[in-house]
Amino acid sequence: MQAFSNKTGIYIDDTFTTDQWGTWVSGFAPFYTSDGKFEGILGIDISAQHVKDYQAKTMQFILIFTVIIIVIVLILAVFLSKRITTPLALLEKDLNKIQHLELDEEAEPHTAFREINSINNTVTNMKRALKSFRKYVPAELVAQLIDSHEEAVLRVERKNITMLFSDIENFTVLAESISSADLIEIMSGYFGGLSQIILDNHGVVDKYIGDAIMAFWGAPHALENREYYACKTALECMAYLETFNAELAAKGLPTVHTRMGIHTGEALVGNIGYDKRLNYTAIGDSVNLASRIEGINKFYHTQVMISDTVYRQVSRQVFARKLDCVVVKGKKIGIDVYQLMSLRTQEQESPLKVITLYEEAMTEFYARHFEKALFLFEGVLELLPDDEPSKIQCELCRRYIAIPPEEGWTGLRVFDTK
Image (cartoon, rainbow, N blue to C red; front, side, top):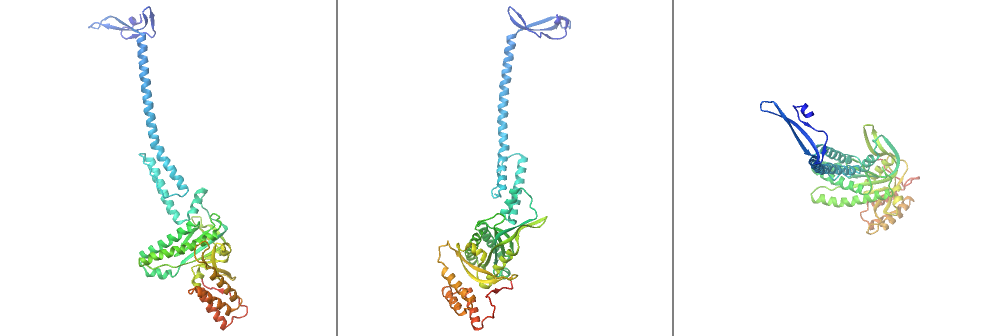
């Protein structure tokens, strides 16, 4: 009836009809003559089972298509996530290395994502900046700053450290006698070789002062056997310079001869300067004394000299002889200084006989027994004909034999210059 009441549209039952032939869904549509007059109603009964089968196939198709789409999406998601996570993982690994100042390897995350490439470029630039920063500041200090997650501030603390000063003999003459290119080549090999030896022996290169090197052990972290490592460093540096000088001579370049002084004492160590420019360094009387001890080598024509405070800590690990009791510039009290000769672990002829004979001669010298002291110093020269300290003491003994020193003479040698 509804179909006849609405002769202009299509009508479909919204319920199924069941009879003895089955379950049906019915639809009706009007039809007209050629001149547009209503002619009748066309009714069609469609089996509900066909509809259900069609719906089932449609749902099956939709389900299969959906599963395929989900699989494709998952594959794309995994692919894209790897394209993102793999370079990010490389960057994370690189950043962890940077945190420990492992800056030599370059991460190369290949990716089409502009943002990740931008992050990688930023990390690379940061790494280059840290590499440069590390060249100006002790690497151990840089690592400590990174680990502490704190900004460096003005701060010093008193620490007992071992200091080493080195200086090239007649450097001014050397620098003025060769070209700038040759000087750069010499100093690059010199500073590079000595600095690496210091670092290999747990030292900190504080600064380069012209041709001088200042290094110390025991800061920013405490170090056991720091006096031994300082002495070992000095001897290894002298061995390196023998090879280095041979290379220079083969190139027709002048050789370099270095003196070193080592002292242990209390110093103020930390960030010194002002709030916008800091220098991590050590200052104090002990630092100055280490520099003065280095300078005393000039008088005795020795290479490495250590203070008595150093010797007391390494006397069983090194061969060293007490050269003299001296008063350095700026001091009033004398200190014993020792010439560092070798490590006791080295497989070479022991200098113990020379050391014993020289120190026995010094004992007689301080006791004003100048003739006996002269005899003993001459004995040292029989063993070491070119031993400059013994030559100096022989000349002094002869002078005092001829004109004895005044009353109150202590034997102290006073140095008024650095």
